[in-house]
Length: 376
Image 1 (cartoon, rainbow, N blue to C red):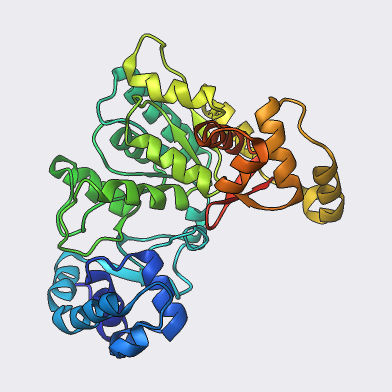
Image 2 (cartoon, rainbow, N blue to C red):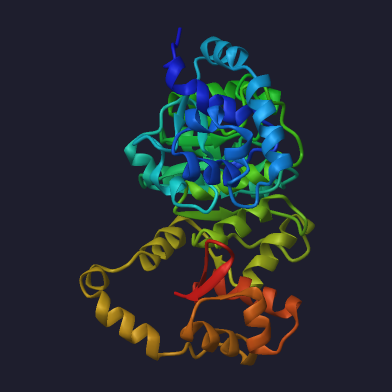
């Protein structure tokens, strides 16, 4: 039976149990008090000194720290063979640590290895076609054979096929769940989750006993993209939740790749729309590998950053329309947020937001923490 280091984990688990205490507020508290133990033992007056917290919220947090107990969480971890990794430890995934709002604690079953730094996410709709299932499995299998770890969400449809493709190739795969690890969701994927645990990991930021709620899936998607070097959208309708992963990936500076589908199929409406907005069209594993090769900095660029920076600052891309050129010009002079770019371009908020997404996906610009933008 797995025995977690209880005393080290208890303060982190307690912070994770408090409702409303998300990654960003937890980060602010840790920056102020330097350790979870100090946060939990802080007075209301000290908590209220955290920027934007306020006395009422500080009082609620203070009361919650006294109210919630970690005994059930620890017991559940032992029963299910789950361990936890926290953000200030070296075994926490470095790619995930670099995103704007990384989870302070991750619960996992299985292992995350150094080779998992080379990961690609494959996501898509639950209500997918046979074409989508076949291509998801084919892409995952080929990329696993090329040495990539496949990351997805264990959901029905495309996600499950991506995990199965990696397993068929005897490759590694990681499943990110929205709810706690005490009960696999969807339940029919319990056997698949067990197979994944033997060749990778299942993980979640949610407390062990937390049932998955609808609002938790978009937050889960930022972890999927955060663990990955790129994401591939295989099949998604216009309002598919998988599109949220593409937005997170764009915000995190990850390339977004998309497999085209029939224009007559509503199942591919969102995927085809992303391609129109600038996502990279891929047809097979070779396209993915070529794109990742082109995306990675070349050896000469790493050696000669001064030359690269000079060229970047002088040459405006020649494939921009008028609105995009105005945005690029503004960003070439300084980092800007959305409001500043609206003023600089003279365009409406809707037009600027759409142009920004397209330019991000073409890797002309990139999003910085705090929703500011700069040229790539």
